[in-house]
Structure formats: structure tokens, C-alpha cells
Amino acid sequence: MRVGKTSLADDQVCDLLEAHQSNMYEISPPGTSFALDLTGLSGPTISLFGAWEDNTLMAVGALNRLSDTEAEIKSMRTHADHLGKGAAQAVLSLILETARTEGVARISLETGTSDDFKPAIRLYLKNGFVPGEAFADYANGPHNQCYHLDLQPEE
Image (cartoon, rainbow, N blue to C red):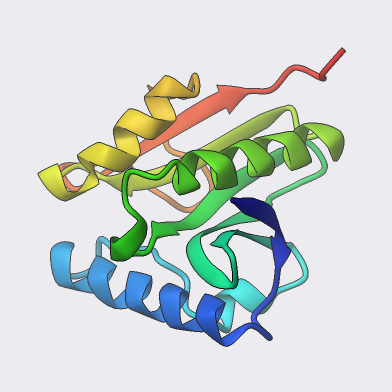
């Protein structure tokens, strides 16, 4: 498996991100999905990452810089054909490494609360994220929850 930065110039990345956004709208009650579309993922504060098996994209994720010291994870998605292969962990690890290198002190994310989100929540908990207060423009509620991880510089 190869992991690295990617961009919206890759059709596989765009296809997986569009499928992710569509699925988030399908499984989330109206007004509770904050998945970014391709325009939202093209901004200057966004870095995209991917995991590939040969030339096939397995998973994607994004790092959105909120400030000099805070960032959030967006659009984590593993292609259905590649679930259970460690691709999401590989992308998340690269996002966290990149955030540390760039001086991020705290990384956060917003996710859903239904059973559909349990695999992602398990991944985040396994990597040290803890449930916490809402951040940015999010609000915790019956369908949304926020997680945070304080990052320590690698020594």
C-alpha cells in the first residue's frame, strides 16, 4: 500500500469523494451532514491524502487547517472494495503526521452518531481521539458529535 498527498486532479479521488458526500446525505437526517463537496475540498486550507493499492485508490481523507494551531479531519472514506485492509488507518496516520509536522496542536472532527458511523468512531478512538465539545460551526446533538486529539510534537 502506498499513501501520500493527492489532489482533485485525480478522477478516482473525485469519484470517491462524490460517493462519500452522496452517502452522507443518504444516511444523515436533513441538515446534519457536513460533508464537503469538491468545491469545498478545493480551498487553500485543505490538504488531500490517499491510499493506493497499485494504481487503485483505496481510501481518502482531508486535513482542513482552521488556524495556525488547529485543524480538522474531513471526508475520510474507504472504498467499499477495500474495507478492512488498513487503508483508513494509513490515511489517518499520514494526516496526523502531517498535522504534527505543520505545528497543529489540536486536531478535531465532527461525525454522526448512528450505527453507520461506528467503524469510523472506532478508528478515531483507537488513535486517541476523545469525545468533546463542538468546534468551528458545528453543534453536538442527537445526530452529530465532535472528537478531539491533542497532538504532541514527535521527538
